[in-house]
Length: 165
Image (cartoon, rainbow, N blue to C red; front, side, top):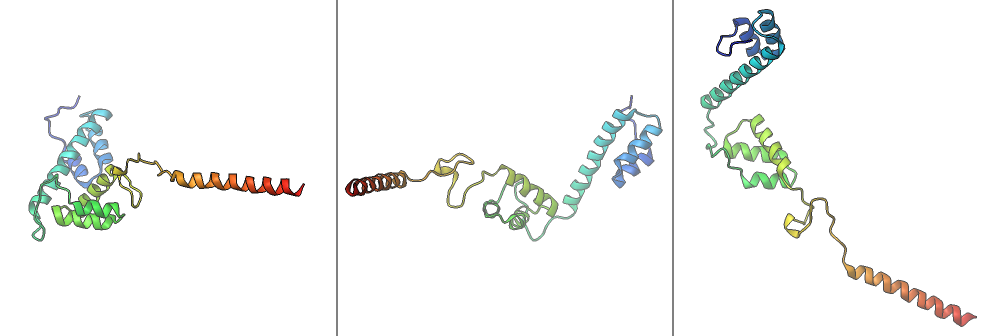
């Protein structure tokens, strides 16, 4: 069984840093340190640690001077409104300006936020009492007018049919 505190061989770490998880697993298996499942779990954990270090150092090294850093949970209302209008690129731009995120992080955040939004029909809002997918009902006045027209037509037909006999 693999030792969690035991350092990984240098060639395995090099393969991981290149982004080649498959090669790293092969090299670790070849060294006899772990079986396939253990090697995969161990290297995936190490890859997460490497990626976390890279993203932490990238955010610390390059703060955005043009846009102030805001709270991580803050979401600009203008970006939500842009998403409602179907302007995904504008929402990404607004989020980047608001939070200082990178392009990929902002795109991922906007796509995740779009999945949580309630779709609305133009002119209607969720407050109108409609369930998602429910179509607004037509007015009952239209149906009454149709019924009256059918009855009136039947009465006129009956009157003229009786009158001609």
